Image (cartoon, rainbow, N blue to C red; front, side):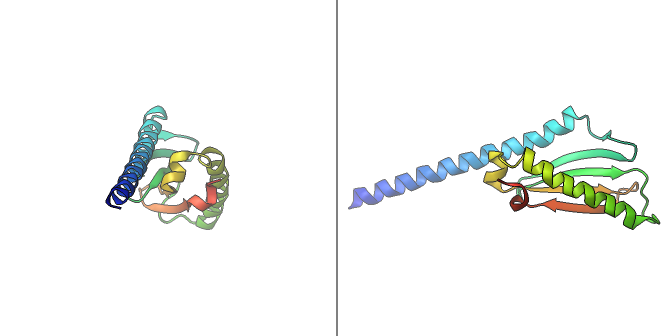
Length: 140
């Protein structure tokens, strides 16, 4: 009886260690995604006439990868704010589709249930528009 209990505890411990090792590898992978994106894309970098891709960060405590952008022509007192927000909502829909294609089958994103956060700032660095893509929106 005692041997059976010890065997069960050993199996449970081994499984727990393997699961933690997988989580650690997935966390390291996502930290590398953020770092490599910043380096290979040479961020911050102007991506179009109005947008600077600022940086990518990964918050391993909350499993959130954040893509930050600066809208160079947007000021805090912008008059056509609703028009700009409608444009950003269209980008949001497109980003959800892209997340399904790019991260939908990614093992690390699945294991950690990563939220993809997109932050758009005005030209003064104030948050202008933000949207989150939750795991249930993109995971397959």
